[in-house]
Amino acid sequence: MTKTSFLITNDDGIHSNGLVALAGEFSRLGEVYVVAPDREQSACGHAITLNHPLRVEEHKVDGAQKAWAVDGTPADGVKLAVEVPLMPSPPDFVISGINRGPNLGTDVLYSGTVSAAFEALLSGFPAVAVSLCEPSDAGYAYSAKVASRLVRAWMENPLPPDTLLNVNIPGVEVDQITGIALTWLGRRKYDRVFERRVDPRGRVYYWMAGEPLEETETGTDVAAIRMNMVSITPLHFDLTRRDLLEKIEQWLRCLDPS
Ligand code: MN
Image 1 (cartoon, protein in one colour):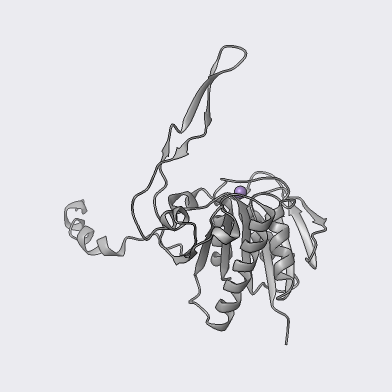
Image 2: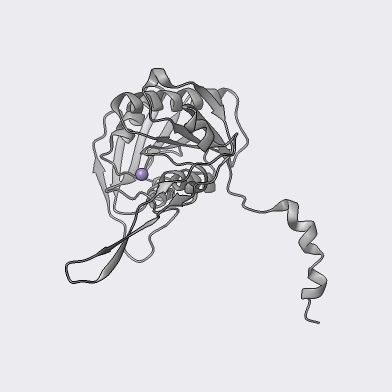
């Protein structure tokens, strides 16, 4: 029987502690391959590179059979891993993270970490995205354990294809974590998003910052993290409002120009 193989990627770059923690943990479950950006690519969303060549360099990551750094986005890395393919055989699972900082609610649309996992789904591989709200060594070790237990459960009880699990770990001491919640995506709205500043030549510029506003809805990933719970949200990429198809169908008569 061939060994289970894992593709590990992220958006914080191949040198980040979260990626190293995942590689170490998953090397106990099977063969680990790493393909990750050569520098931080946070908040790049699902971008892919079309206008310059992609360079791939072999790297050393503890626990990994092989590792490659890519001068592109997380989605580029997943594509290279499975399309070139850099990996000797297709992965059984793709794990993205452990991101430095949360990926909650509507922010998943901007997230390079979650988009790498979505790219895996597009290629037909199950994927987990893992994010740690406040980075710490103990937090990374705990997050990697949660991810590997989740993947083991998934291997025993397979989920439908096209499923991504988005996991967020609260940024508190491990003994302060109050449980694990299955959640849906909340909303992340930010206060004072742009800081207005003036450069040394007197020209105005803006720097995106902002603090997330309090969200009151319960059951969401945002709410779980607020309660110091691990949040697990199953995602897929079908953005279709199926519930509205019938209603909008009624418009079609008026839209027909004939
Ligand atoms: Mn990141």
